[in-house]
Structure formats: structure tokens, C-alpha cells
Image (cartoon, rainbow, N blue to C red; front, side, top):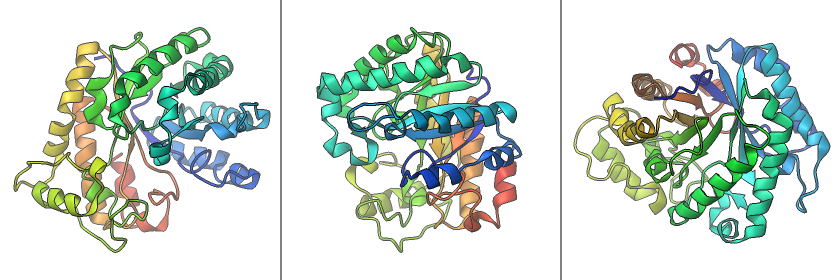
Length: 342
């Protein structure tokens, strides 16, 4: 299987250039060079940087030139500390993963699709020269599987445009259902040999997102540890998760969730990646800071074991805050052990 060299173990800089109040004060202080220097000591080889399009474009598509400075600085810091970097377009013009119900125009409106492709042309022109350490992730978490064919069309068109300016940069492509690994099989044969199939994994979601205020139907005081039986996670998922977040555990029996669950869960996508000789990468995985720390550590050990077995690169969510922050107080009792197991 083709290898995504230099992107074996990583961490997300969630909340810096995306999913926050993107004031100049925030952008200048949330992540600084000292953070990149600290991350280098975590035994990782790369960072993933989620970015909203509004960092570099206004609503009418005009460039915000100073917005590029944050990406530029991060590249400089990563090169200084010998880290690779993934630039992830977390929110695009016309598409926001956490408001997907109101984003159907992205899949039906050619003008919006043209703007998406043109945004990537700008990024490729500016950053394609860093192909030895910088990868491009086209879009974070397409949700509705009804648009899988349209999404494949957009992917092919955009990659072709990027290749005019960044012929050898790695490009990450994910599927539908919040970038679920079960959607990897819906992706078409890679455009060339520098494509990576990308997925996110927060399963069992009822554990990793317990008490999450942003999930409809989830009681904010709900708590559960890890491991439990797959059936127990399944039953609770049907009680507390929206329909689009269920189904992964359907029909599972009274066996404990373990590394074997992840091995089985990843197997189909691994077979697809081997068929196409394309690297497989997990761009997000993690546990909310409401979960029991020891249970959290158990979960990380199991999923990491499966990553290692299948040679899947990954980036944990997330470095700080965002309800998942590795360096925040909640993880203090397990932080060193967790870092050792990255």
C-alpha cells in the first residue's frame, strides 16, 4: 500500500483558524511559535490545521491578504521544528459541515463550486512549492451521502485544477457521512498517486461525545466509560444520538468494545486502499473532556493499536480547548501516558 510518509502521528490545531471568533487578537494568540515547539516534543511528525475560508476571503470572494500570514507563519514554524503540516479547508464558501442542512447549494450551484475550485487554485499557487512538507485537505466532513456522486465530481475537477500549480503535493479526500470510514468505498479511483483517502473516527460516538451540548438528544449529564459491550453502546446510541449518527454498531453482540472492534471497523476501507494502492489516514479522532480519563486512555490504546496494525496515519483532536484539548486540565492525570501512546 502507498505510504503517506511524514504523516504517521499528528495533532490538530482545532479552534485556531476555524470554529471560533476569528478576531485578530484570537488569531495572533491562540497558537504561537511556542505551541509548535511544544508539539514537536510530543513524539508526533505533523500537525493538521483546520482553516475557514473566511480567513482569506470575504463573503464576496475578495482576498484578505493578511489572512495568509497565519498560514505562512505556521509553515515557517513547522519547517523550523521539522514538522509536516496538513492544511484542511474546514469551512468552504457555501458549505459548512455543522450546518449541512442549509448547504445543499454547494452540490447544485455551479457558481459556488467554481468558487471552491478557485479558492484551491489560489492556495495551490501560493503553497504548492512546499510539497515536501505540506498536504492539502479538500474539505472537512461532507455529510449527506445522497451527494456522493456530485462530491466525487467536485473532487476530480478540483484536484485537476490544483495539479496545474501543485503537481506533487499530497491531497486528502474524504467521503460522506461526516467523513466516515464506511464512506471510503464510495470514493472513486484516485486521480493520481499523490492522493490520500481520509476519514474521521469517533466511534463509539456515544462514548467519545458523551454529554456533548451540540448533539441533538444528548443529555448534557450523560456519562459512560470505556470499554463496555458493543450492545450497550448500540442501545444507548439509539436512545441519545440523531439518526445520522447511528448504525455503526447495529447488530453487535454482547462482546466488549476493544481493538478488535476497530480492526473490524477499519477492514473494509483498508481493503479499498490496498485495491487502489492509496494511503489511508485518520484526520480526526478523540474523546470529549467530559469522559472518565482512564476510560479515555483505554480508548486511545485500542484505536492506536488498530492504526498501527493497518499502518494508518492519524491526527488526534485536538491540541487545546475545543472540548477535547490534550493540554487542558481534564487530561492531566493521563496526559503523559496518553502522549506515550500516540
